[in-house]
Image (cartoon, rainbow, N blue to C red; front, side, top):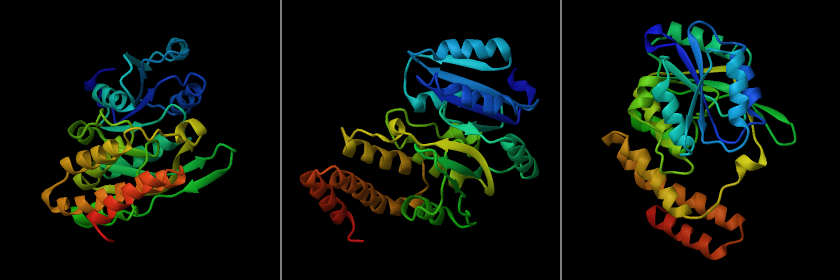
Length: 284
């Protein structure tokens, strides 16, 4: 396939050492691809049997595009996939999740009806480690100004955006790539930028099954403060002037998140440090 094919949707799966779960994700996409969609897998330097799995799938599905790169992290793998994609829209699916049947057709109908959309936010089925499932439907995104949208997203947490069940316009992702120097939270800056850059549609149809497992829930607190402040810097670097007044309150919120994590870990001294910093930024 070439960029001249006029594809509508590119599904990009970044993967690193998920050979055992990758077939589930691949099958969920391949069974619903059509002439105006494609599947790209970016292997971020896997050291397990991922290359073998991908070679097998390519032998049976010649249109599957596989890109291999030296390990550079999830953000770099997503950026590479977006850059290589031919579709007007991109759906980024984690290698341990899966699309729901008819997800691409649902998205196709919506963006064809509203071609200026920047994002489509769908529902998801969240699957816990014990197998219990819960339907999560995204709240509405109101037609308000940029500052109000960012306030609702960053501070009130009343706008929910997740990979797997969200469709993004590719040109906007190219304008605001994922920051590769952050080990977590790198999607927040991208989502904030997309939110204020073009109209957003919200649908109640479940588009993906998102699996929560122990490995995906563990995060080291090494250099936690440095990364928290890095997230703040990346978020506001891409936002307009009218949103900058929210920076201090969002920084305080990040410190409160560090406070709660340290408190849960029994690190009372560190927790106190973070709480004092948050308090200095705003007594709210």
